[in-house]
Length: 112
Length: 115
Image 1 (tube, rainbow over the protein chains, first blue to last red):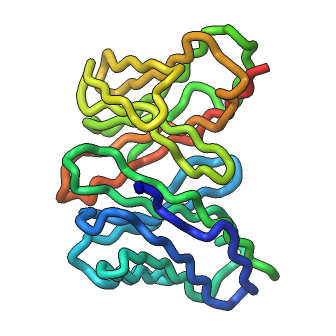
Image 2 (image 1 turned 180 degrees about the vertical axis):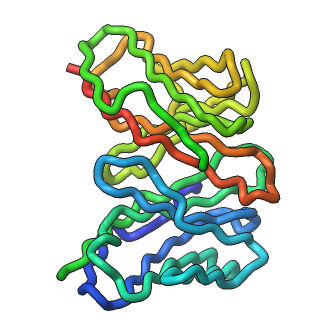
C-alpha cells in the first residue's frame, strides 16, 4: 500500500534526546522530508535527505535513512519545550508525479 | 523567503454553500497543492497543479474542484459544502526542480467548519 507509518505520540523530558521514526513505502523515493507543525500553523520544513545519503546532520537534528528497511528517523538532541509539535515525515516517490506521501504525524510532547 | 498565504485562517459556512479557498505564493513556483488534514489521517492530497490551467487529481478529489488561472494563485472550490468537509485545509507550493530537494512550502492553513 501507500501508507507512510509513524507512531502517533512521543513524550520526552526536557534535555533528553527524541527519536521519531517513520517507515515509508517506495524504496526508489528520491527525497524524504521531515516537517514540523506547531499548533494552529501550517507545516514547516525541518530538513530533507536525498535517497543516496545515509545520514544528515543539521545542528540539533540528525536524520538517519535505512533504505533496505525503508526506515527514516529524526533525532532531536537536547529537546526543548519549544520542540513540542507534530512531526510529519514525507516521501516523494520516483513515479514522475508530484504526489508527496505524508505520514500521519507524531505528536511530540516535551515535559519540563 | 518563500511566502504562501491563504485567504482565511478560519471560515464557517452552511451546508450547501459554495466555498472558495484562495492560496497565493510569491516565489514563482511551478507546483501548487491543496491538502486536507484530519486527526489521525495526516495530510491527504486533494488536487495539485503543475502549471497554469493544469491540474491533477489527488487521493480525495470528490466534492472539490480547483482553478489555476495565474501561476501564483491556486483556488480550491467546494461546490456544495457538506459537514464531512469540515477540516483544516493546507495549501503548499514547490519549485518543481529535482535538484532543489523539491521541498514544499506550506501556508498557515484554513480551518473550515461546515454547519
